[in-house]
Each structure stands twice: as C-alpha cells, then as structure tokens.
Image (cartoon, rainbow, N blue to C red; front, side, top):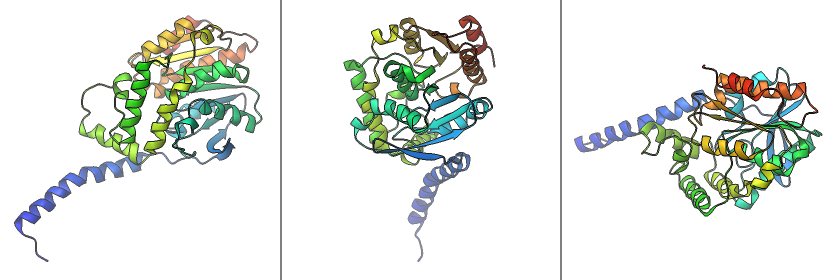
Amino acid sequence: MRFSGKKKWIAGCGVLVLAPVVFMSLWVWSITPERVEGACFDSAGVRIHYTDEGQGTPVLLVHGLAVNADVQWRWRGLMQLLTKDYRVIALDTRGHGLSDKPHDPAMYGIQMVEDIVRLLDHLHIEKAHVVGYSFGGFITLKLVATHPERLLSAAVCGAGWEQPTEENLVFGEAVAQAMEKGKGFGPLNKRLGLGDGPPPLYEKLVMKLALYYFNDRRALAATMRGGLELAVSEEELRANRVPVLVMVGSKDGLRPDSEELAKRMANCALVIVEGGGHINTSGKTAFHTGLLSFLARQAASPDKKEPSGEVADLAKVCTAPL
C-alpha cells in the first residue's frame, strides 16, 4: 500500500510525538530498581508487603505517597546503612507497591497507622524505632499519639502539624481529583515547594508514568481522602513522652509545618537539613547522618523519656554542608 505525501507527513509527526514517550518509558524502566520481594501478612483483610533485614534493635520505615519502600529507602541508600547495626523492617503501605490497593477512603487514614501496629504484632516485636517520610511522616506522627507504648522513638521527616480544617479538606480533595483523573499531583506540588507554574514536558511525562505505570490512581486518591484521619491535636502533641526527631529540608514547602510541630510537641528535636527539598532530602548524606546519630543517642540512654544528647550537636551534624 502506498502512502500519499500528506499521510507520510502525518505518520512522521506521529513518530516524532510518540518517540519521546517511548524513550522516556524505556529510560524509567531501565533505572527503576528491582523490587526486593520480602513477605506479606494479612492486616485486617488487606495484604501488606514488607521486608525484614539485618539484626539488632528494630527500626521500621514508612515511605511517602506514590512511591514504595525500595524507592524511598533502599534506592536512597538508607536501608543499607541501617542494616549494619539494626533490624530494618520496611513496608509498602496499603495502596502502594506490592501491598493491596483498596479504593475505599475508609480503608486508609487510621488503618495505615494500625497496619504498623499489626506488623509489629505479626513479627512479635514489642517496641521499635519508627521513621516516616512525607505521608509516612504523618502516619508516624499519628502513631506517636495513638500507640506510644509501641515506640522506642520516632522520626517524623518531611512532614509536620496540620489540622482537618475546611481549607485542608478542600486541598486534599483537589489533590485526590487531580491524581484520579491522571492530571498529576495538582496543588500538592506547590504545597511541597516544587513550583506552582505549569510543569515542563519532562516533568509531565514523569508524573504520567508515576500515576499510570507505578501506581493505582484510585488508590492514591483514596489515600489522600483518608488522610484527614491522621490529624493530631495540640493537646496530644504537648502530652507526648516519646523521643521524637523532626527533620525537614530547608527548601521543603512543608518546613513551616515541621517548625510548627516542633513548637508544640514535647520531647521533640527539630533539625533542618540545609539545601534539602521535599523530594531529595531523604537521600542526602546529612539526613542519613542525622538519623543515625539520633538512633544511636536513643540506644545510649534507653531509659530516658526525652530525645537524648545535645539537640544543638545533632542539629550541627544534620545541617553541615554536603
């Protein structure tokens, strides 16, 4: 079959349009870390995937929205550092990774906190250090308020104190709808300090791949809609007795929320990682050094009911130039 000049022109344009998408897909596939398959357990009817590595005092890691445990922790090198001295458990939160992905918002929120408690029960662990980043940080903060007896300490990273106000309700729904419709992360980018203008083509392609290839969009939307259940009251913050580290990048849009949390929460140390944004802070050497220092200080004084060691010294370590 012969093509006319017009048809050849249309076909050529089609190739030019599709080629970047194909090459971007191949590139993302080539750099995507292979998932480390661990084990699964039943968390009140939802299958939760986790890995359990290393020996020693348990440290449980809770990743952020739209990623998984390997991308958040292993790909950034933190798991490899922690497993030298600790037993490291990293779960894929419900709606993410190799865990089940229900579409009902009622299956998220406080149930994501209870997943951590059920996982500790499943592994016969009485207490653990828990580290959460971004959405995982909000889960961890709620865990501190609801199950302090299960914690040796907590690190709330890339997150802070937010309330279930009407404004936040509208914001959460806007983000959920944007993800559900495949339009990216909507106003979330601006909140995280990632810019409020139209994203360049490269970032649009990455967002599309994140929403369509790596995740279930309806599950992510349900996660956002259930997130208001993670709110913690000021009274709960002031009554806290768990040693808590709040760590956030200096360029993170959630830095004001982190600072607000530190103002109100008892037994809490705030550390700002200089030069860190919301996306890259968890991979920075200063973040790793600060977290390891915090955990080591807790091990050195397990009977204390406050963050041990000099907060100023810890802040100095975390904010050192890279």
